[in-house]
Image: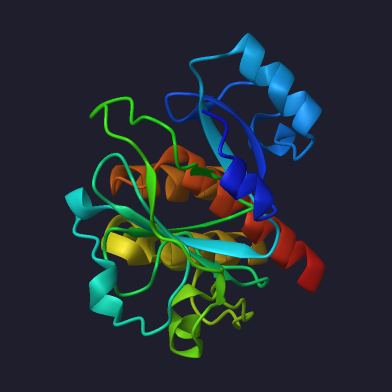
Length: 237
């Protein structure tokens, strides 16, 4: 079912197989052109739908991993979707870069139009068979200021070199390998930045990558940290 209510809210959408965007370009091919969407719906009548909107940040609650939006004590009313797995998507207006997961709170991912998409209401969860539906029908509110420290992307600050290269390199890998929970993204990004500061030796980058994956951090997120660190250090230089 085409999520016309989300189209009316300014979202671009695209068909999904389960929860995966399968058209060329992935979620970057999502569109708000209703003629194109109607043609896609005719071609893929049983598809789910994903969506993005510039300037929108989604707090993606996953109860299976301990996520609970109630722990944030959010006191503003905003568009909220109940997912087919029992979690919630809380939509907020926020334009600045964000980290991958909410700081200090397990089980809450952060999604923006830059990095991904959310499954739209009206879709069916591929595992549970349950419907995604709007639970709080409201305008998308600005992100509360008290949440800014929890969502802001880690800041890059160059650090002077004071110890031997081998010791520093082993320390980076060890730091990543011991990371847990929602802090893994930030530590992985930090370690890649330090590695690029030291010349970006391939063996060190591979060691950091393997250590991050060993903590359970998805390979996709590790690669995102790597690309972000390369851009950040390159720009600073």
